[in-house]
Length: 338
Image 1: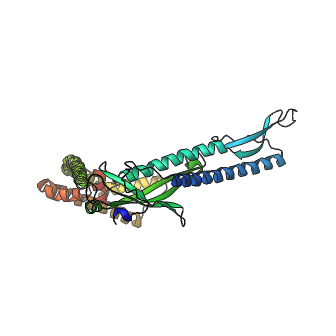
Image 2: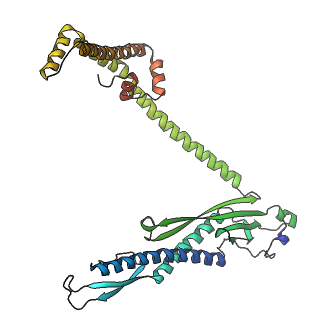
């Protein structure tokens, strides 16, 4: 598209070096935010008024509403001392504080416009000029979207200038926070803007991208180096388990082996019968089975620890698989309760 074909283009290059939100879009944003906030505050007022009516019907003193300044409480002073409550101030009704609502809506609007201007500003340089835009409110969803058009500044032919033409696509997204989740206790309407540039590449963009990628790669390399250092430190500690777990397993095997001797079985029988239990053939068979299985698992662990001491590569394989702590090693060999 040539510059003379753009809609609403000022061909004298009256430069708009800084993008400013068009007034009709600013008004649209403020109207939308104001209406949404009024609606939420009015709903809260209606709820409070219904509660007030119920309290009056039931003869219950209404404690009042302690809000954030968006609701006005019309009060009535009971001069005559009442039998139930005495003299007190009682609300008549609740109304939106429109002054506070409008002020808050303006603040949200200003923040939204600033965000829009920042998003557009990310896509052009000081050597480029914005010529026009066709940003509008999409009637199907009430969202701002469209294009901002620009080109490079300086003396050049029409053909050269046309080669520098670019457009910035912008689309708005609404986000809402209601009630206690909102900043004002009623409704906060946040906006996001998706934006992307098309046409002539932004001056210095390739170099910027290259530097960003290099910086990202450097951060990732540093992070990976830190992770590797932590892992190696952990591996240094984990290697010692080969000796420690052999001693532990050996001690446990000897300890459990006692309960398979005649003396150990007799002691087990006495312990069961002392508390009124019965130690019969089935009990004996179960006892022998449980202790035999525990010893077998411990024996497997002990044999492996001896192998690891002569071949750390095998232990490293287990470590790299994620079995990198003593509890995980115990879990792997199922020797938790022995």
